[in-house]
Image (cartoon, rainbow, N blue to C red; front, side):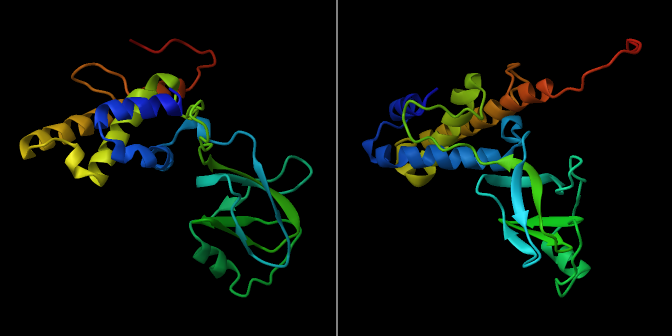
Length: 226
């Protein structure tokens, strides 16, 4: 679904023009929230982003594309780079070198916390970083959220966006308290099933499908026992 199609479906469900100016922002917010909550394979970098470091400082800002989970770092060694140790937090880097004055040819340890990355020891080189990147922002109604498989655009995004509308404008849900409770529970169930599926109906959720795509490939050997 394109952004325009998502908005059109939301208009039919929410039935109130008061939401119109907020829809673009809501769509971006929910995409970012999903990317933070779930490990979406298409957002996991396969080609690294580079970060130039020097002996002038130990603390740097993560690249603008960074969203979460730094999972691999390599130094600037000419032979493909050596894999660096990723420490738990910046405090660990500070404990390795409290004065931040130790230098060497290559960095050996890094830690990412929030939007910052610390290095140890100080070195002048270019590091290669792998992490989960931010979804590319949609700026036109003709664009689609490519990080989510197309067949799950409606089942994953629409329920979350409807619930967002109900939270911001509670009067949108239903006119009576009983109807309101039922509507909220319906869309909460839909939001859950869109991501994780439904054992009752057999519906597959997005993460069920993505998990199957990541199953390990067997390379020969005997067939497993029944």
